[in-house]
Image (cartoon, rainbow, N blue to C red; front, side):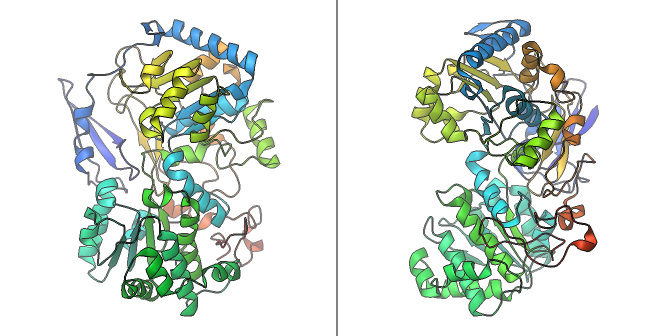
Length: 554
């Protein structure tokens, strides 16, 4: 029996698992007690991973117009149809729609192909639906999409605030760690903020059942309470503007706005102010909102104003939902960024074009998820390649999405499943590798990079989820311009990719990137490029928002 260390493919906690295959081909899994994300724990879904590796319902061979064909024929047809659309309508008529289920290397290759060589930035992902608000919040505050917390901080805080998060169901192993921390330290206080009483509330000392959508008012009021209590730290740049906006949110107004008893609001504010260390965990209840980005910044602002960030047990911590939503954010899997945290600004555009060796690099952001499918519906986008996701089910207004795909001249789908709601609109379908069959990396909520390793042979004649796009690139005649990532045999090209100076990583130098090793080393835009001696105390500023500086500023 062989045993392989790999990573669970379900949620953003990123648990390590040990997968074993016996002589009969049966798969069993157990938690990896050496993996720092879960320390051997698994939830019921992770524990049952071995039951998901069968071939029932899997797509085995490529299909073109409903007919099974060999890979060479499918790839040749894909190249010809895409080339025809690009020649007739331009690169903006083509789009990729990816998924937080892809490996980081797949994300990188697809992004490089679309933005670097097709020449349009129309590659977005289902992560747009859940995490783009958090990305915007962090970039407003810190100048880059950086996560200033780790799982260890959750266990070493005095006050844990969960808002818009039912971690007991959505991030069960992290919830188990929090519950154990509560048992080990009865003085740890937990506040759950959610309109519903969820399973997460069972370990909470306080449950604020506020009105749906009123979270921003609650945290604006907390910022005001911090100011009134004299609990704001010095150097909170843009503090006067932020505090002025929050000044009218006294306890009475917050209570009325949120539909809460005033004494409950005041009690929560007292706890946050008094706690030496506080961490706020937030996810879809905050992000999936018409004002999600502003709510993220309302949370971030109270941590900046109180000084409860950048040290152990403190900070605003956005929890990702999918296993590799974070990896996509790192290598440009969103239409509003280039790659490796670089933006559509002249220096970054020049740097990336040099590295990729292309003169066709997209110069402006592309269509985001909902905009993309609206453009398909209007006939502006005439070809879409959907990878590892089912937008007919997951996007808002599934009827409109169905109508758009039904009218689209070319729909390409790469998936493991033979039957999906989206697949029935596909003109070309590519079978993809599933968990247990592919190699690469994923990044979890705390930005820890872990390996997914294969322990099963590829069934049928399948390739990895994003594998068909590099193969098509060969046939289109640009494969020589996509070194490393096209071969899909290593992540060397991705790891050599130059990154924005505002990122935490610099370069990826190991398969597991320990967040604790880089948290303080994240220079803000003002400090980036300076020597350590030249970096002076202060707080960075961007976009007129109240925000923190980097570890060098503090």
